[in-house]
Length: 449
Image (tube, rainbow, N blue to C red; front, side, top):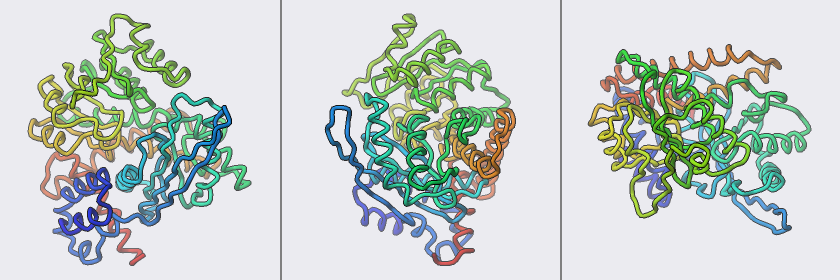
């Protein structure tokens, strides 16, 4: 495994995020390789760590003042061993090939855990939709899809949303795809309900994270109710994480964006959450405006001189990092332990560094890894694809019940795999091992392709 990792680092030395996720994965699946020498003999790890296909393209577009901009677009199709490529699109200035490859690698195993026949991919662009008008976002999405359309399809690659790509962007992307291909298909998920979307899809990732946390707590005879929670982020995942915690009787104290975080000692109730949704989804404002509406709350701006996040210093019982990758480092993890946090369930992709995860493990903090805990989004995307194929729409209750059942199954799968390979109770190892066995076995069945 060290040789595998050394080869990856040597080939792409600048891709730190990709190295991080592969390293964590390799450590976890070591027991599986000891039981399945055929995986080593046929270079399954080496094949999995190299994308089946990578597309990088320019995206020229014009702003409202007539100025031309050029961004870079990506689509990394990592693995189609168990189904067509599936994974989101991210529009954010930080997007680069390393981040897209790490997300695509994670997506392969996340999708495997859902039990659905879905491969893994990820894409996006270094475009920032913040501060842009609807017409500027539309022009960018149309320019982006003018290249991407030739690489995707309902049985080939089905993108969805991610950071910076919400319902507005999905609408513009789908409209351009439909025009270029002259057909109406379920080639994107996260669509509007009037044109092929699924009920519960916007809520799915956030709801799924809380369902996973509830399953973890149930093993200790505990519930979400009565506990105080720290949540980072204020986008789609964070909003519906907060909503489901409230549904289950918990209290949420924090939310954040790139400008800082808010802390509400009284708790963010349903009315306050509705304000946040309007603020972020409609007005696209900053989270600090929450304190103008609710002055008893506190806004803590980002301090660039700190190498830790003050959000994680508040006293709480549980935490859901739902902002971005590597937002919790070792110092943050120690602050969380000191503040009473006994459960961390990841809403974002890889939000905890390896050092932070080690601290959680050393202090017996229940840890729900992102590839298991936030798989609800892609699970309901899979359900959306099924509904599109059958030209029907399931009820809200039916989709939610299916989501809940999928999360329960993922939770049990993680525990069973961890127990089988001598890592009792280790959700991270269990998630990696269970998903790896499924994908690797499919690769062997299909030959050297």
